[in-house]
Image (cartoon, rainbow, N blue to C red; front, side):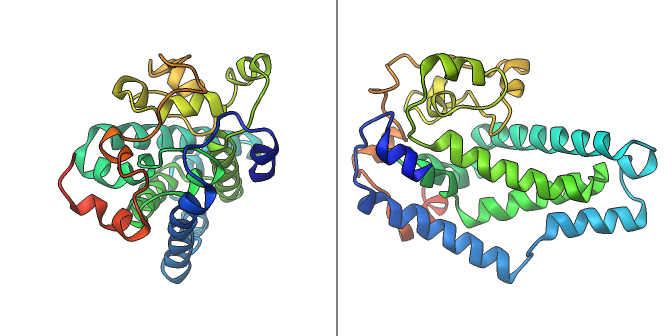
Length: 245
C-alpha cells in the first residue's frame, strides 16, 4: 500500500511523511510491544480454551467447519462495526478513539494510529465474544489477518479507478468510502464505520456514498486539532486525559 500510494496517490498530502509517520509508527510499535509483553495472542488462545471446554454457541451445535469459520468471521466483523460506532457516541471511548482521528491526512500508516488503551479495550471485547460465540480458532487467526489487511487497504491514499471503487464497495470498504469517515464534517465522520466488509453500514443505515466536498479537497481529521497540524507522539498518549475540544 505504501508503494502504491507513493506512485499513484489519490490526494496530495497536507504534511510530509517525516512529520506524520513518527507519530503513527510510534503508536504502532508501542502497541505491538505492549501486546507482546502482556496478553500476546489472547484472542486465539481464548478460542482454543473455549473449544477445549466446549464453551460458546458454536461449540454446542454441530456445524461443518467451513460454516463455523464463516459465522465466526461475520460475527467478529459485526462486533468491530458496533464497537467502532459506539466509540463515536460514548464519550469515554471517544476520548481514546479521537487519537485515531487527529491525523489530518490519511495513508496506510493511519491504520495503526490508535491509543494503547483503545487497543486493550478492543481485545477485551473481542475475547468476550470469542468465548460467547465459541469462535473457531482458525477463523480467529484469519479474522486478525483480514482486519489488519483491510484496515491498511481502506486507510491508504491509493488512486483506484472510480468504476472499480463502486463495484468493490458492494463487498468491501474502499479507501474512498472510509476516507469519508475521517472527514472534518461531523455527519460524515459519524458514518461508514465498517473496516472490512461494507454490508453493515448499508444494513444499519450508516452509509454515506459521497462527501459534501470532493474526495481530493475534503478536510480530514478533527477541526479542533487541524490548526496545530500534527498532534505529537506524547501529546497523543495524553490526549484522552485532557478536556474534550
